[in-house]
Image 1 (spheres, protein in one colour):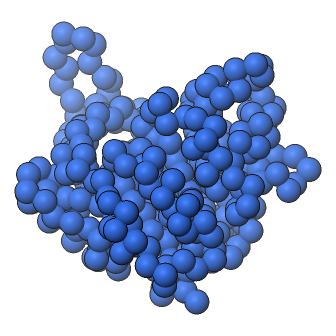
Image 2: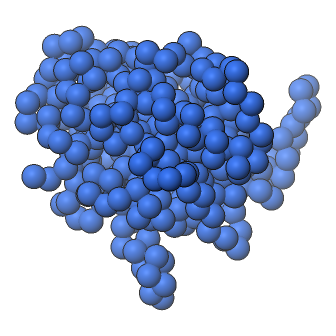
Length: 330
Ligand code: RIB
C-alpha cells in the first residue's frame, strides 16, 4: 500500500526583504532587495514530503485554508504542481496567511512575523476529521504532520490519537506555544522535532528538576528525557535540530542518542524553511520504511541544499538531487 502523509497546517505568502542588517526600533534602514515567495510551515512541509519522495511512492495531502486573494491562488497552484492532493484545501472569503520576513544577507538568518489570515480559521469538527481520515487512510506506517501555525493542533492530536492510533503523529511545536506543552499532549506525539531553543523551553516546562548543559552532551541528555515523554507505541522518536551544528536523534531503542553533523556549504543564502525541508525529508523517508539514521542523513543533505537558495518553498530540492549528493554523483 502506498504510504499516506497528511499535513494539516498553514499556508503563507512570504514577503521577504533581504538586508545587510535588521533596523533598530525607530530606525529606517535601506534594504538590499525584496521578493515574494511561497511559504507557511504546513505548505513547506507538504511540498518537502512530495518533492523529497520518489515519484508516486508517497501520497501527500494538504489540509488547510487559503483566502480568495491572488496569494491563495498561487499557494494552491504550487501544491498542484508538486502533485500534492488538495481535496481538503479550502478557499474561504478573506485574506490568505502572510509572513513578513527579514533575511540577513551575511548569515542567511531570518526573522519572521506571521499574520494568520485564512489559517486562523482552520478548525475542524469530528465529522470533518472522520471525512479526511476515512478508514482507507488508517494504514499502519502513515504519518500526519503538524505544527502550531493554526488554532486546532491540540484537537488534531487528540482526535487522531483516539480515533486513528496507528497513524504516526509527527509534530514540530513551532511557533512555540507554552500552553500546548503538557505531559498529556506530549504522551500522544509519536515523532517530535524541535530546535535547540524549543527543546530548552520544553525541558523548562516539563522537566523543571533536571539540569541540562547547553552542549551537545547536554542536548543528548535532554533527548533521552524528552523521548520518554512521547507515546511509546509507534515510532517514538525525538529529533533536536541544532542549525549549522547538526542534529541529535533518539528513539529509545538505541543505547544512546546519535549526533549527526550538518553538511558544510559554501554560502548560506536563506535559512527560511530549512527546518520544514528537514522535517519533510525525515518523514518521507520514514513513511517509505527507511530507518531513522538513513532518514536523518537524507534530510541533512536536503536542508543543506535548501539553505543555498532563496525562498522557503522554492528552495526545497527534489528527491533525485538529494540522492545524487548523498552518493557523491556529480
Ligand atoms: O518555517 C518557515 C515558514 O515560517 C515561512 O515560510 C513562513 O511563512 C512561516 O510560516
